[in-house]
Length: 463
Length: 73
Image (cartoon, rainbow over all chains, first blue to last red; front, side, top):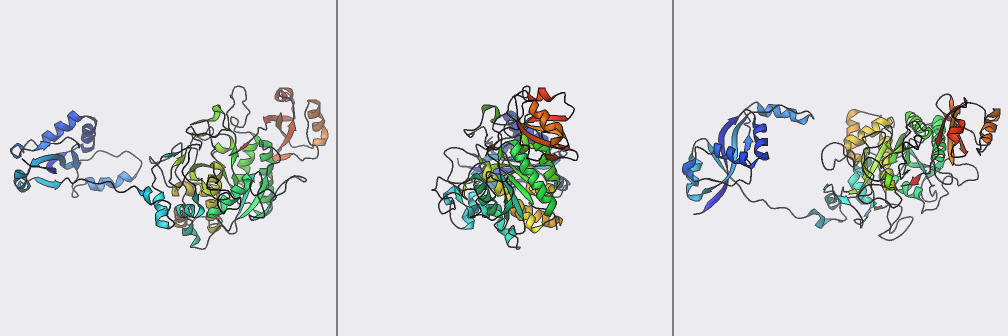
């Protein structure tokens, strides 16, 4: 006897359809009971319940339930709803099929086999934009050593949607980004100024291989027309050196309103015990450095901070065990509410396993967003600092200036944006990876310039 | 050890630099203090590990914070 796999829809109303279905999902026995009840009047058709799918409630488009579903777009839990019919997966002898179709009150639907489509990665790394978009398959996985291959800048520009903003004529022009780091090479990158003590390395004098030069290259990914200020740390970077640089930022902003934002790809790699070190930067939210950063942000300059490279899956060798993993790897200035904290993802929207994880030790919802790392920006074949395919811009140090470049791009289009508006638009425009909402790995998702730009344009913000 | 000392705004030459030196601090007297807020300032010094205790009861000193080493990410 040949049997046919079908989906059988029968009339059966239930006032608490969602609750009833949840019970069926939770218990095979309950699912079987519901299926048998739904098919109790159809014994003469020789129907066999397959049991691989729980009975599914259906809602008539003529009932008010469909109108109520409009409220499901909110984050609040909505009331249950009344269903009109139930769909049960079952098998029926082919000889009975026509009679079943003819029976009033039942509908017979095919239950056809579905096929998984080809792995999109098979087409990865193509030069055209469509193939690049295929890279962003949003699996939400983890990229750990050995890391996936780095990609070209053009891939990131496509994934960021930068061209959407460029098409309107904005490429970061008239925006100055301050890079607080170990110095930028001004022969290669557009360093307009900055600050350094007399006798120390001056702005623009760093070698092309410097960490600050990498930050410069990465800001220009989304904002190629932006200009730079160089604030090199004086000797060994410490919070006193950073404090002095932020004061220099504030001094310059008082004079001419620049730099418009700052990039900060540094931080701490361990958490000393609070009982012994209550005034340490990771514990004292009113440390002078944190206060000064709040002053700079209050002056209207957004501050982008790297989340850190002490994620649990493959932390940097520099990380102390006290500062690795969720809840203890984003701290100090990098965890301030006022700053924009950036995690690292690769071009496939996978979190890079060294990217530090929230909650932040000051503001819990850190990181705010993620951005791209592992690409040929300053380093790599044909790039200013040179190197082979295994030499590429990396770390949350690289992801942060990419996000800061997006901030610069938005500012070039809407010069009046406040730091809070920039942050909010980056969050609202982010491509969420994994479960909806914020998560400790990638925050609210991966930045997308096109989406943030369109959101701000609709709001008429910052003009 | 490097420290950041927060004080009320004042001229370093008016005794504060000498006071800090007496407590074992080394500071660059030519380096201007960093203003903080409306009426405070921060001075970078190198000093002994127990500097917070040494300065705890000095009315001029508002806070003694470490200037810890940062790492490039």
